[in-house]
Every structure is written in C-alpha cells, then in structure tokens.
Image 1 (cartoon, rainbow, N blue to C red):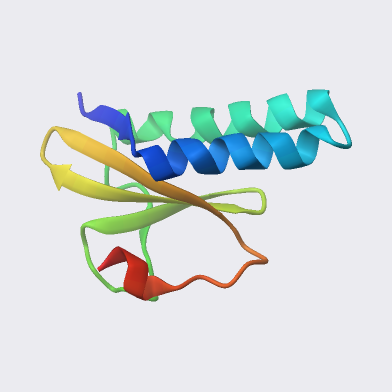
Image 2 (image 1 turned 45 degrees about the vertical axis):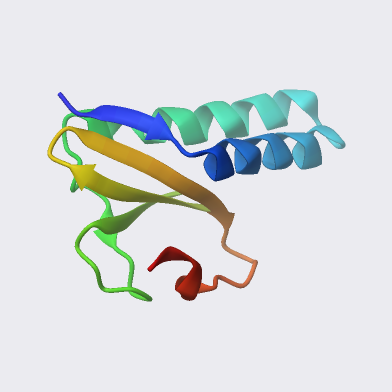
Length: 99
C-alpha cells in the first residue's frame, strides 16, 4: 500500500479553505475538508487513479477532482504519493509552479 503525505502547501490550502468556508458555515467547512481528505484515500491502493494534468502532461503529476477543488499530487516513487496542493477551480492555475 502507498503512503500518502501532505506537503505543507497542501495543508495550508486546507486551512485556508476551511477558514474561508467557515465564515458562512462551520459545518459545511468541516464537510468540505473531510470530503477532500477522504477523496485522496483511494490513492493508497490506486495511486494512478487520478488523471494526468492537461497543463503539464507529466505522468507523475496528477489530479483528483472533489467538488470545486483540484487535488494535485505527485507520484514520488512506487511507495509514496505527495499531495502537493488543493486548488479551487475558479482561480487561475499557474502550471510553472509544479514542473
């Protein structure tokens, strides 16, 4: 089974998402964060289950979608998947930050 690790950037993204949503609803913020975290658990058994990012077209950097969020991850090696960032789909995505 693959080990999932969260980059500091991704953890900060989760905190920012939770803080922003909790201004309107603490319950919805918790549900959103839990949904994002739960959606990556499939990567433990199927690390290539996400799609290759069209902006990068690199087999080792992939994404899973959850609601309005793109969960971007990197296949570090056969045993490690690193969650790089959680990106809202309405925001500009700069692919040069991930090469």
